[in-house]
Length: 162
Ligand code: ADP
Image 1 (spheres, rainbow, N blue to C red):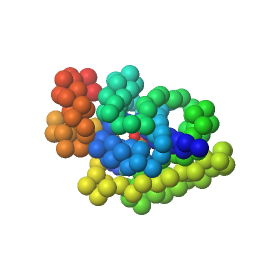
Image 2: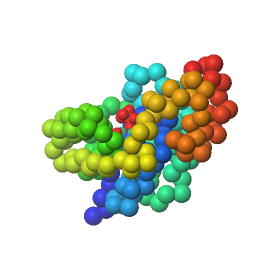
Image 3: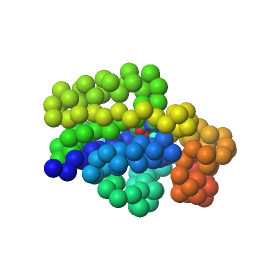
Image 4: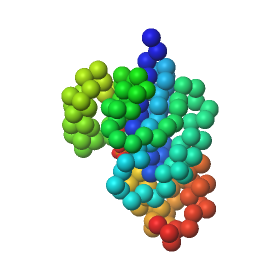
């Protein structure tokens, strides 16, 4: 039976840390759904539609990767898609403490779900969307941390609107 996994996140913006996890997961699972959460209360740098467009472009040539949006609980989108695995990335002990609780809660909500953790590639372990947004805000160069599509798009944005 084909095995599917969901990689949920805000991807505001998508970084090289995220793309590394998706590429690695796509070698293990038949299908990886990159699920962009719409229910965040956070103010985002990228509007939702733009995140969808960019993330879809980033993975267009990776077989078995599909980008979609979702609202509500991650376990519900897994149930709908028939995916038994949630993929998450671990950069540090702080990530572990946070992710462990979410994984435990998700397995209570949906016992068939297994969360699979990928240890961050050391080259990308310092990258977070939050820091990328901060660098952008202060006019720094983000191109070493994000896919080219993101740098190209961000270069055209009006920084004053952020
Ligand atoms: P969320 O809003 O759910 O935290 P993010 O888009 O920030 O979503 O992150 C989604 C997932 O990607 C999380 O599991 C996070 O730990 C992981 N992740 C983020 N940045 C990196 C990175 N540099 N290396 C590995 N995993 C990462």
